[in-house]
Image (tube, rainbow, N blue to C red; front, top):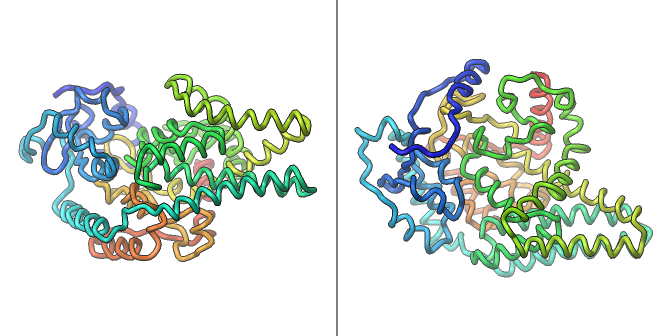
Length: 439
């Protein structure tokens, strides 16, 4: 079979698995450029560089990619046409077993029922967007900005105003996130416009960079070498495996203390002033550069009126609070959970992850879904299990019916449905940082 252009990491993976005392399963998947969708094997060797989503498609080679294909392309009219144009053949269990990892009978039955669940939710209109809700979300974010600027510039409550501007950036970040999933209006051009506007003007960052990174996270959450949310060195290590056998640095030994007050700010500035501008320049994202230019034109204008020092200090404070708001709440749903290393060895778990359901069940976690305040604070992403099962579903649909159906489905198929309270989620996140640092 043709080989895709990936480095040979097998020796490193074997060594890492041995050092961490993890199970390791040798497969030929790394050699494969075929994937399975709805019972047919598709050869993507000549399509990788033309794939609109980039080389993320290689995450699925050698596996049953049916659910990933369905969820990532839920609102695409072209995806099925493109798929049909690729070389394909019927799956042959006997001949394909050595190069294709497919679910066992029990998992396959669960996936069939999951397909039925999804179809039922679609029939009930669960995947239909709400323009009223989108307008509310956009206006809410804008009102936070308006209130923050008013308090910071027109009253004596300058610090409160800067703090509210940080909250506004967090709210813009949540809105941007959903726009990237095309689950706001359901029209990808409109959703991308909303995403790029709020992330560019509101946060000074690149929506295209975010989509690329975040899609990798959804394709393989907590999978070392695939999920970029794990690649946070040198500032943070969320799992021993990311150290790849090295001892934690002096900085990492104090990461549980530094994460909220220092690391989140450093990451925010790194994104704003290096990583995201570099991506925009490399990829020629004209509109993103326009939105970010508008943001900094406003900052320069304010500095000319009120003086550089107070504006810079206020900017740092607002970015700091916004960074803490977003990064901490993203961390609580994943970072302390088991990771997977290439070769299908798992850290803190003994069973290889092979399906879309397993990723959502074992490598995501809900947080206080019955708490209205937490649901607002995390903008429905406290329903992380549901979000990873149905990333194209409007997130405000998760409370109530969707959550109930998912819980019943998980119970029926004996899948883990992880949920903890908000305080416990914070405790797990920061205690995990401490444990990794003391490795």
